[in-house]
Structures are given as structure tokens and as C-alpha cells.
Amino acid sequence: MPLLVLTHRQLDDIILKAHQAGRRGLNPLSTQQNSSPPQWSFIPAVGFSLTLVTTIGYGNIAPSTWAGKALCVVYGLIGIPIYLVLIDGLGRLPGGLVRDLAVRVYISKGWNAKTVRRIIWFCLFTFGLFLFYLLPALVISLVENWSYPESLYYMFVSLSTIGFGDYVAGVQIGNSYWVAYKILIFFWIASGLAFLAMVFDLL
Figure (cartoon, rainbow, N blue to C red):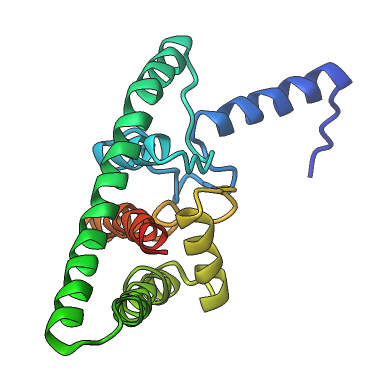
């Protein structure tokens, strides 16, 4: 095997190019037979927009041009407040229904309204915990080949909008994803955030 000798400058250039390629979406684990998928097709673009307005910001995809960065700033300044108002409205809607139900039960049955609200809150929280946290984590663990605790961690990081980016569903090299699966992830995260807003509104 021939020996390849590089100068420090040549090595620095290679590292810099690899870093720039990674920031533009090239996965360092990709090969000629298993190359990185296009990062800016429609579904990844929808996912990027969702992570921007929800402030999750995984960091696995980022704009590389100044025009793209400027557009993200404008989109965030407009989209984030609109999304927060939307989530707040969606969270308050079920809360109002729960309060009305508690009052009706209090009037018809004579039960304590606070007790009824707590029972309804507990039932909704348990149902939502299963529907927006435990069930998605199970599906994601099966599709992504992650352990269940890893998937629970991913759901927590996503729904808390921490978004470290160490785990991102739907972007693993070598996995073939259905479009419906990626759409389902977007739905789970968006509706899960609305559910959390509802829970906090009922507290």
C-alpha cells in the first residue's frame, strides 16, 4: 500500500472541506453505495420549518448561505409568535371544555368541581402521555433501530424543545423511510406540544 505524505496545510484543507461538507448535509458515514440523501427535498424542508417555528432546532440541518440565514431569521421572527399563539389557542380550547364539563357534573351530580377537574385532568394526562410520548417512542424505536429508552429520550428532548440533535428521527443513513412515517413524526411533535400547552393550562 503506497504511503501518502501530507503537509499540515494539506491536512488542514482536507479537514476544513470535510467540515464544510458536513454542514451542507453530507453525512461523514456515507459511501458511494450508500450516499447521503438530499437534505432539501420537500419533506425535510417541512421538518426544518417545524423545528424552526417550534424552537426545537435539532441542528442537523442548517442554511449555509447568507440569503438562507437571513430568510430563517425573518421566518422565525414571523413564524415563532404565530406558532406560539396557535399552540396557546389549541391548549386553551380543551381546557375550556374540561371546565364546562366539570361545572355540568357539579350541577347535575353535586360533585366537587375541583375534584372533577382533577379526575378529568388525570385521565387526559394519562391518555396524552400514552398517545404523544410512549406510543411514538415505541414506533420510533422500531423504525430507527434505537432502544426504547433512547426513543423516550428523543421524544422528551423534542417535546421539551431542547433539541440537542444527537438523536433525530427520519434522517438515519441506510434507513428507507416512508413519507407517511415522517409526516407522522411532524404530527406527533406538533400535537404533542399542543397537548403540553393544554396540560399546563389546566394546572
